[in-house]
Image (spheres, rainbow, N blue to C red):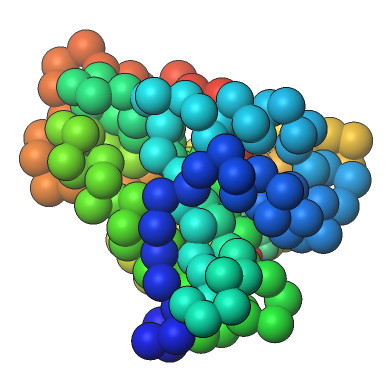
Length: 172
Ligand SMILES: CC(C)(COP(=O)(O)OP(=O)(O)OC[C@H]1O[C@@H](n2cnc3c(N)ncnc32)[C@H](O)[C@@H]1OP(=O)(O)O)[C@@H](O)C(=O)NCCC(=O)NCCS
């Protein structure tokens, strides 16, 4: 990632910038503003923004849901502005979220991604996520399938923790 870009924890004051990216990236499927506000404030979550250092311009964001000691984390969302894609910003955001999940004691991270989203699937595979199932017609109203993916963090999963069919809500 360019040295002109830095990652930092998202704050409520980032809500406008995050929503601008959210609505331009996900168009008809964007999260409502109040939902995003609640996500940024959730103590079980961890949201990061990627910012151009000298312009205070938010060019990406990503979020993790990972209650401490639950053993599992979920990538809630990730987006990078069109102009800044392909420069390692998405990878850096995800690597930082994976590190945070480890710090919170997670042994597995889950996510859902549209079956027709090749760049995002490539990014996740590149970081070690493996496909574990398909949810038919998960993304409505388009009726597009979701591919469920999981990253194992190198420690055996705890007995009684979630099976692949039991992911938390919150697909990106
Ligand atoms: C998916 C997304 C976050 C990737 O961000 P990015 O900053 O462009 O990704 P990076 O530059 O860090 O790329 C990291 C890896 O992702 C993969 N990747 C990224 N863009 C890709 C593309 N257009 N085609 C194929 N693979 C791609 C590659 O494996 C790449 O590794 P490489 O550089 O070694 O080839 C970005 O494309 C985006 O915001 N998309 C729209 C929102 C979205 O789809 N979010 C995911 C919802 S689940």
